[in-house]
Image (cartoon, rainbow, N blue to C red; front, side, top):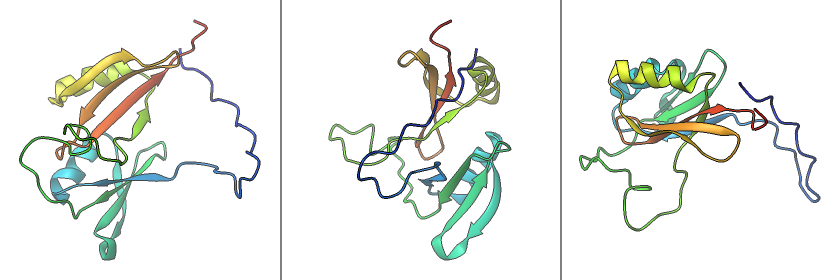
Length: 150
């Protein structure tokens, strides 16, 4: 059962502006064609190209946006420098997307030959999750929210 959306928290004292929504995450990639194709398979569609910034915007049918940034160096080691190295550098390690049915997504990923790197596992009381990686080894998390009361 999907949990209801949480009630917004009150504004913190001294906060200059309320943060209303999350607009997008930028994902640096090394091969534009390969990456656009991969994210299209996940359901995103290219909605804008920002040539001056070597980037695009992609959007899911439900309005979730990502920006692919096409200036990444291709690393052939098969490793993510933020997650797979012994020295942990600061940075954003992964976006986390919400889906209605994580088990259906797992079945689709298996059928498509997209490797699941971890999951399906519970993380805390409100979600189950799985992880995959894109062609540049960027980590993507998918969550199904659960009602902890049931």
